[in-house]
Length: 261
Image (cartoon, rainbow, N blue to C red):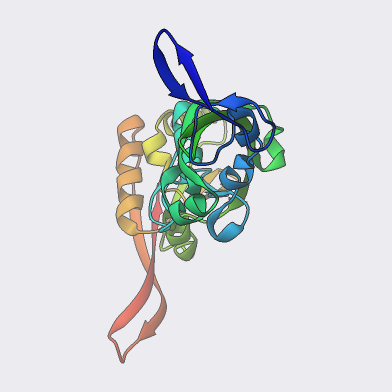
């Protein structure tokens, strides 16, 4: 079938599905019939055909950036960085499932627009609304697809290391000798609360009758903590050591340090 317009002759054919007159293409189908191709199943397909999953550390709340369990980063909810991370988890868009996409007759997929869909914070889900452009047999179509990610817990290396070191090796015993006032302790509490770097290495804190006990993984971090406290308020620091265990074969020993302030 041919059509003559302004002296030019162009070939047209009917769509093999609905009969609409279209320009020839490799599928002999119009864009409306090609839109019935299930692109959503390609986009929602995770690695190995499973669900789309994003991993988050339960303790520090950081997200895994790569699947090698080495890089975890802090991300704000519904931020551009979070959007970029989620899009990278879709194999069909990141180029990790090109063979599967091509077997479905799709040459290329492109994200034209993306937005977050609100979810309950405790639902362990992340939902996106994507506008996808797909090239199918030389014809471009667009579809809006809702994609859901499952948030699963995965401990990051830093938290794993901290858990292994939970058997503390140094303790700072902060005590106030005066019984008539707790003003000195309050000043130290405010100083510790305002310094996030000092709190970073504290494994746990226990409240005692005349002060607090701070547990640290290494003696160096405990000494650094006491040096900071001594700059805030005058104090005397006494250091003692106690032997917990000893391996004479390997010439190693487990020693716990106590710094009394």
